[in-house]
Image 1 (tube, rainbow, N blue to C red):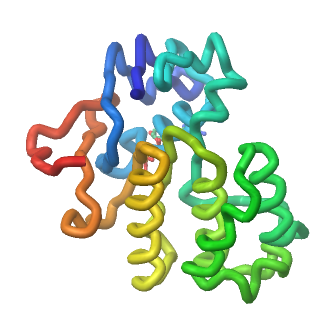
Image 2 (image 1 turned 90 degrees about the vertical axis):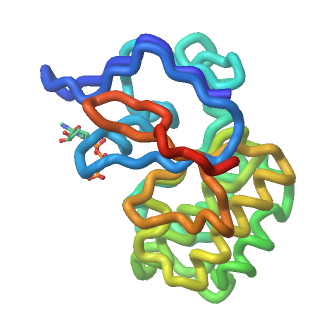
Length: 215
Ligand SMILES: Nc1ncnc2c1ncn2[C@@H]1O[C@H](COP(=O)(O)OP(=O)(O)OP(=O)(O)O)[C@@H](O)[C@H]1O
């Protein structure tokens, strides 16, 4: 499903990540690594918003050879989302729904289950960090992406929202066969949502040897 080839990313002359050849099958993955190990760098590269050397393929579609087609396949929620403050949540949803060819009304169950209907018509500049995080997560579920990348999805959302997010992930996986890559310093609940573990260390990625969970 995901194939990373001859990948190198540096910031200036400072190497950040080097991945000669790495592939994973469809599933739910939890990427672990200490602060500064390169998790966000990898997620942003896979999302197509960070330039790098080498190539990344999703279901054999290369980001370098078919960037438009590739970007339709992947959605990304940033760890600390930033949106123009004057736009309402509703306007953001409409914008993303159009860009991602989302089915009409796809956002409605998400708005309801996460309790966002009461504030979605207000400008995002008035949102708390948790409210903003919920909108950014919802945006990542719009359309029919084959791969959803969630960078630190658990930070700032409350316990109830966490349960709802687990539900979104497992449902999207069952309904559309979507794969997920989550970075998190918090422990994911393996009973509710089993995830395979990937490890970033020494500026590269590997499948964790302790990974016993089934995706
Ligand atoms: N814009 C940037 N300019 C220069 N260096 C950067 C930039 N972004 C990241 N880095 C460096 O790249 C390395 C990886 O950073 P990255 O943010 O990917 O780590 P991370 O694993 O997501 O960290 P954290 O767990 O703290 O969020 C770090 O050494 C960091 O200093």
